[in-house]
Length: 546
Image (cartoon, rainbow, N blue to C red; front, side, top):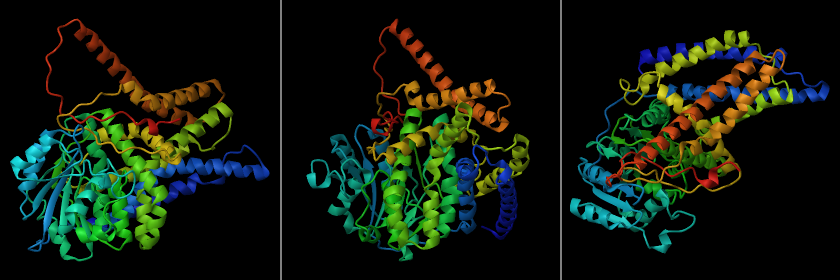
């Protein structure tokens, strides 16, 4: 931050903290506790109110995390000049059938054109002959682990059908010959200065990797635009603040890594979210990381609900699995502040659980007659309004720290709509991880490929169930004398938001079926090239609610 920004930050944090403390001092007053029982039974009332408070506070907690992190944002500076003579490889992976050759035809020339001397490699998961021929024509080196049993195992560093396993097989064969390896996803086209803008940070021998933002270029689509907007805060203020502490997350879509650092932890984790887990293992081993907040590569975001939900399910399941099975062991080896920040960041996907608990509390009140709070609506507006206003003001002020401030300012309505649609998916991910149900790694199909789509009504079945429960709460509230105004308002908001997605899916399904019947009376259309928009397989069976 500049001196002026730091002064403004202190003022905003003081006001935000003051309104937050005032709100919770009011909220936690004893008269707001429910009274379902007396004596020791009143402890149950305290527990109910504690759950309600946790539900209310989850989003505020994640925003508070951001407030703390951004304190260490550094001013933008010119990148250090790279050392000469580094042995550098620039790699990307390819999954035939899920990613089109048209993507490779765009990405590989961009990788070849990067300024610093390097070798360009394609790591082909499927041994595709057309991909091999394209590499030969362009002068790109080619590697595939297809058919090599030792590199296609069910677990460990060479886990089959995982990105980390693909990378590790390449490192075992040839990657160890390099000092530094840069990697991007197949759908990302790098800028010419991708390497020269990042390699200079390796002058510090403690730096294990350099991250760059994941930016979507196909924002003409509402869903892709919303998915991009959801990431502005993370790849801007949050990652810049973590980088100021040299603890930036590893970003799987594009990063540059010191081979010696990877070798120190026996290379990438064979995991659903290999980037998160690998980065934590590197931090636990004492390596530091830097983040370059520049749009050094532009890729494709999900363009359909199916692709978006599949992506979010994968990310949420992987993050929760890391938190359950790996974080407790790894954070013990980190400095305390770094460990706390790492654990706090992994709480974001629990918004699904928090929202579901909120609906469960509403059901307990409207159907079971269990009081959950005695908070008055006017008091909630009076004390919660200033706190909410400060949170919005701080959020808007922090947009100056995004990757592209002039392009990434605004209210981001599309991103908020997608956030409302995503929390039931996060709930399903939580259920799957809690029951130890494995979720297979699936690449979101991109480029010139298509895949059988799943009907929208099927995708939004969780929203339908939750909307019906919320609607039933509203009806029950109308039938009882003097229901809680706060809880009635909450139930109505849930019904409207969740129900709107169900209505949208129903109307879209009716329109699609109508077009299908109309085409049935026409001559069969000529075959055409599949649409290049990103699509994805349906929600995996193993991750659905029982």
